[in-house]
Length: 260
Length: 277
Image 1 (cartoon, rainbow over the protein chains, first blue to last red):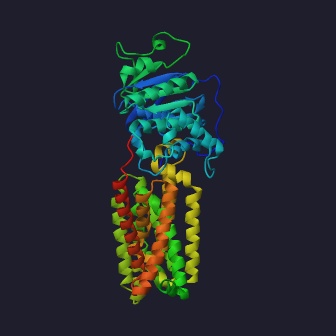
Image 2 (spheres, each protein chain N blue to C red; image 1 turned 60 degrees about the vertical axis):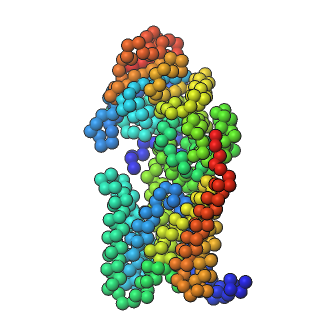
């Protein structure tokens, strides 16, 4: 049991600062549990509203750690994280962390619809049952991700790609504006990749922001606005010839991530 | 039908039936979580560690239920505390605590004269349930079922996706503590029916049978409760007819229902292959 970083109750959500970026970290340092080893060292980055930013780096570079720190799952040793201008936890209903598939017990007896409904819990808190509005949100999202026919199916009976889409559907049902995706394209089929790509492109057009941990370098240029490279817990300059997003070299109107 | 209703002419048999059904339903519904979260060993440990509490209560002339409850409560907190720190693996720590506490109970038992009373603790005596016991059993059943209903979405979510729960600010450790507390309550009532050694059967077997038949959580809970109710009644009737131990009869009825569920599930799989994508 860690210290409660976030409150589980509805009605304590701060309003976003209209001028703030979706996410900014300022010299963020995070230690592994135990506290002696540094997992992230003074990471500063920015995700503008409506930007799709890739987080690239080898295994163990700290990609997941960064996403978890932003989601409030890990305590911050020093530095700061601001989500829509608020500290972590003040408006966490606007942030969705999409875990890797392996973090979930897929044998648990819940249906796809019920699984996606859990995205609404952040708006409910203790003792409140999901209502009509919550169920309607789930129906809409399931249709959008092509899961409507599978709504009643137990989550373990989905294919890997369908499970990945169910996780994305849950984040959409939450109505989050900043999505933190941990390797969403890992070990999924081509059809699911295309489906997820299409949905995330739509989401960007709706002004949603995304920070996506990935090591699929081939797709960076067409799927993302910019990229941040992590190595051994620190932001590093992009390797020669690597995609860094147009604005990384010349500031553009979208105002995406900057490193350092 | 006489053989079915005859036993329940007696007040003690009516009490026993009511107690066994209440206990069975409580354990079965909670057992769905115990089985799905692989906490069967914790339930077993809790049943065994209540023994010293029961014996001390017996020696002091206090209510056995209260003694068992106190010991189970201590165990619940101790397990939650041990599993919080990673130095000793949880199942190892439970193994050490379980056998140690049980040995203390046996040692204390050997110092008492009345073996009859104490064999009831080991093997249960649902036929000796008093009106006061019945009130306690009913209270525990109401409390456990109410808690499971009120915190359903939290218990469910922390069971299959603790990470998402934590992102919402819902700590998985908190619901685990809640489950351990409810488990302690259920175990104390289970001891009344089938005793220390067999209590785990009520928690695990009906829920495991139901898990073979459905993959919807509420249906699974209802089915487990139904199986448990049937086994409580069936076991009591059989024990009356055969003049056999009531606790063992109830547990064997559960085992038989699990075997039937397993056979049915196998047959169904052969008949209707799993849906592919």
